[in-house]
Length: 270
View 1 (cartoon, one colour):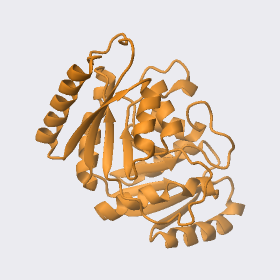
View 2 (view 1 turned 90 degrees about the horizontal axis):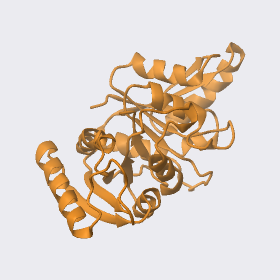
View 3 (view 1 turned 180 degrees about the horizontal axis):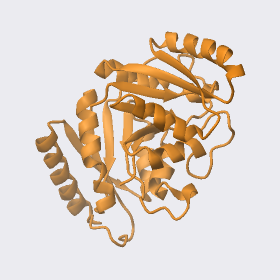
């Protein structure tokens, strides 16, 4: 599926918080990690390259320090496209400051323009003591709400799960009132039937283990609660695709899950 995992770093501890997840993917698939750091001038290159080389060696990865005075998001995408079948795995923000309303500006533009799924993780600024210990991804959680937009990630979630040897858990959130444009039943029994059918179909088509769970409450809250205590979980969620403003690129549910769930999110535009 992928031959390289590209991790953009910026010299801050924030960027390294995604390492356990990237290492888990690498260990499951045998794919090598490639760390890249973009710097503003040639004068910074020697020091940045030395620091990055040491960091890459700690995770048995490759290192590239690149002088890129322009847009960092464009530089990340260009580097990913330089080597076919590259998966971008990155944090939502780094040393540039507080996270924006939805995503850090660089990650936001990468998701918007990469043309492929991107794994994004929101750092919490907490040191685990073992930042380079692999965290295997055991379950890819796929929220479905009956809309065509949510179904876009079905193939991505299933093929990614098969690639890393994980399960797919299909979930839906039942709210008090039906939401316009969505066909998911609002009754537990009907929702269970809907999810069971989708899970069975995914298992048959993609050859992955599946399970399903009906959640209750506001979608971003209930999905975040479901994954936050599930070690080794990853969410697979799409964005809206019709963002009126760049700062609103992520659908509100996806953005809420990224902020609250504490797990990496495999996401893309539909």
